[in-house]
Length: 387
Ligand code: UD1
Ligand code: UDP
Image (tube, rainbow, N blue to C red; front, side):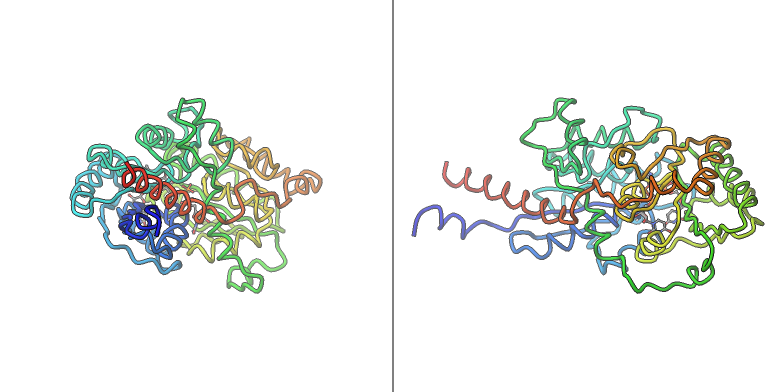
């Protein structure tokens, strides 16, 4: 037997820890958890911070993922200090106990930032899933633009979803050999959730109408911008009797307060509790149009061929705009009103946006990330053993 073969056989398990805490991170990390768990080379540890509670549980249940650790940091009306300080303290203990070879964080939440910072303090390598998204405006989205840039500084493995994200990282001087374009794991998720024969009571209710799907939660939109959004939506609904709207509302009390004030007695709108990811993807797949300030939905809609009015002034997801599926509608009442009305009244404008065009990958991003981690581990081990 050659020396290299002996070395390969004795390579120890590589311990990979995935850390996430909010609904969208879970939707995008669960496919990766499954992929890593299926590989013999890895021991996979899942640590959820519990930045979200019910909304996180919904995703874990849908994907049958059981975490090894839950830091349970969520408090009602938590601020950024609560989340960051809560996670940083608790992560120290978990990281010291588990001593993982690599920690994978996702995107731009406070969970990602605090977990990456904890790894940096303990000198544990970080892999960043969904790396390289940028607006270069520190206040939009807030605090996410800071979070993702800060995570990039301490990352050893940048898993960029698109070439554009890779280019951002290169422009910032990140080492090319540490950046991989993998596609976005959200498409891995979407491949498992959307069903042809899907039925739902809300679809029965909306039968014969144009169904509008709405979500809103961004921290920088809380307060006046959110009131403007809701007023614009309400005006358009009042003027268009053929339209019904479904709004699964975020659990943030500030969002609920604004919705209660502006939308409570709005005809033809159902405001419902957060729905699970399977319901969400299937309802979006059957909607006529989506209005949102969500990041994940901007990535899902192009695959589903659904026009999206993004209720923001900037986006870190220019690929969806270039694909023609997304349009920035701003956060002012009149811009949202005009854009919404136009897509209901101008068939040509609607048709131009309603085309399936997916810039976010082929649904095998998790597999690519796992392959890269395997190859890197092997290379490192070979290097060490043969030196
Ligand atoms: C967080 C992320 C944001 C992401 C969003 C996804 C940060 C700073 N923000 O914002 O990037 O887009 O999640 O939804 O990391 N709540 C519950 N139960 C839950 C979840 C939330 O009651 O399961 C309520 C709590 O009162 C909580 C509030 O919602 O205080 C806000 O949650 P938080 O995680 O602070 O902010 P999000 O707006 O959800
Ligand atoms: N989503 C869900 N249930 C809902 C609303 C949204 O499962 O009631 C999904 C949606 O399909 C997308 C993700 O949650 O995958 C987006 O999460 P969110 O808007 O909370 O956060 P963001 O993507 O803006 O960070």
